[in-house]
Image (cartoon, rainbow, N blue to C red; front, side):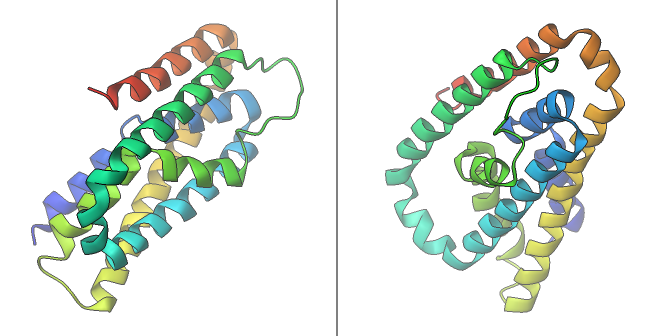
Length: 191
């Protein structure tokens, strides 16, 4: 296995903007670091769970994936558009109960995030399973990939925290921009 290619693939996919990272940035900006970390913990647990499920059920899922792909596209794009609308509507100056900065919202987003689904379905069969089939090697790989994902998510929380004052100064513009990026991600599912 080319370990450099494997790590590069993991870092590029997890650190680049995607629905989860955009929601983390928006949550940090609008609700604060604590809420963003709650979301991040949920996203990380779900990410690791998806990797583990992929490792266990890879062959079976590959056989049925064409049938469920359209359902995942519909659910994923609808949820991303809903989140984009919520981000667009957010007003950091008003205190209200927000559901986007919760552990459960971070957890559920991962199961509707096509970027994560495609990644978890491809990383193990592409890089790990052709070379390592032992349970311990696959488990270690899942743990390493999950840690990389957590590092990516917390980087986006840090980015949101560091640039919070700038984002707050341009609150509406920042929310519109993040909502547009998320809506673009939903539309790109169909391209």
